[in-house]
Image 1 (cartoon, one colour):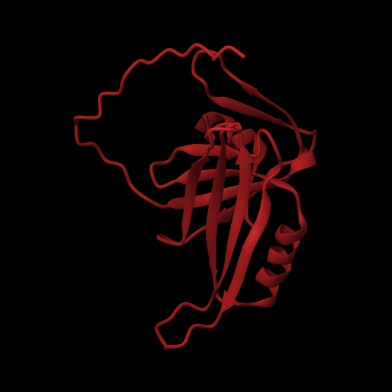
Image 2: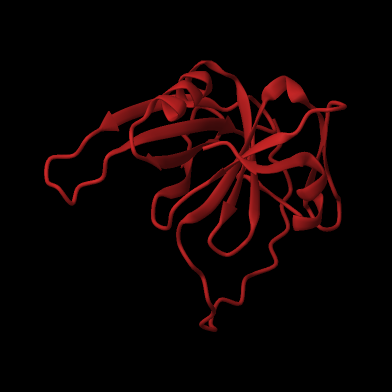
Length: 178
């Protein structure tokens, strides 16, 4: 089998520029609520189209309580793929959050992550995203967090695609769930 031809352009990363860690919010929708996705050939931005009447639900996060990590998995004998994990913390264990988390645990979803640099990243293009881990903890010391923590995992052939901010408003319900 012939190898795929690639084109490299190089990166100019010599300048210091603001690049903040963490995520501000996530938008989550059932996998079947996304009618289609398209990737622009020039900008490489992904545009999701929702089933009529369906929208992503917004989950706002406190600072330093969420992350997105993409890990390349490869071997000499098989294809390469990425494991994309979104880790979220929801402060204060309570019934409303418990019910929402139980729904997330059982669902097949797509996720859009808004990072601390105000960029939106789409997970679930190739396959649905699923809850792969979760904990609820009261903490030990008075200053410890009382919270739920969830890990949502996406296995994909590629890194997450960026979504233009202008494409978010028509597909997102702005009222946070929890």
